[in-house]
Image (tube, rainbow, N blue to C red; front, side):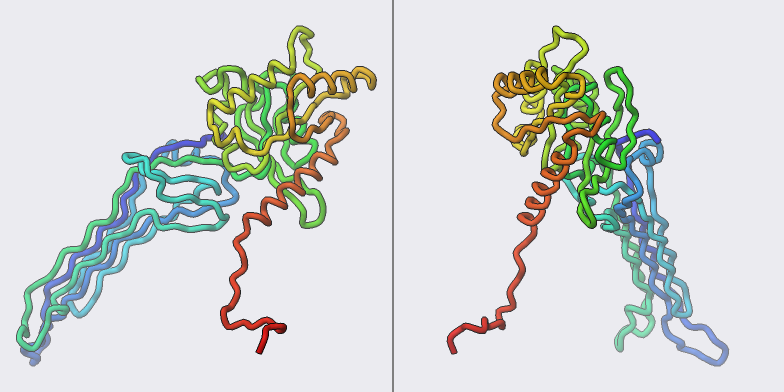
Length: 357
């Protein structure tokens, strides 16, 4: 399925039905009085966060969505039927923005979350509503109210705890396939990954986190070079970034330190807040270096890169060093989750046992 993380749609909730002017007509029953019913309300439009979806491709080719109008009221005290509601299923992490003003209206962050994005119009009143002691035969009715109409921009930011950052062919796809259930396309040429891949990393029973692999960044990405800049938005909701570096490039003239610094610079140009996120260094492809050369290369890289955070030495191909990495990542994510939980509310009627009488 094609990955689409942006789309525009027009939505129109249903209009309310008009009220009815009617009087009771039965043989031998004169002065029956008004019995015109109200119109039915128009259909609402809801957005639902569906955990089984991971793309907005359905809305790329289906832009217009209209709910049914409410039926008009009828005589004999019959109210009009309400219009059918519409449910628009969207991936978890979708952001709905007003296309004209740019205002963020809704965010779907919880699986199964349902929000009303366009309200149907209320039905009009029939003449039975206007009956009174001084107005026995009202001939008044009201029209139904129009439903809401909006033009929306849909944007998807995947919900992941950990995001992989790095150049093409740094080994990000191999790493996510080694530590999670994701099975991305892996090949020995750049830009094999064309869209984000999500995987669930299971550390132990009831211990897991979500990891995201994005297309590789290259120098100039913030100005539109390559593919990675198109998907950097998906890193904005992550709690931790893993900067994957290839320490054994095929071309001996390539300097991994220069490339790593270029990636950090592009990250800072794109989003200062994203740049300030916790970021760990993951030195990959160490299986291609012998033991003596490995220690020297790692020491030289860390010294020249001047990185002050955690550094992990791994081989995604052989899974060497992957277990300590995912264990440390899980413990970090768990700490962030606990810190993000709101404090428990204490019942003001509660009196601690050791409180003075």
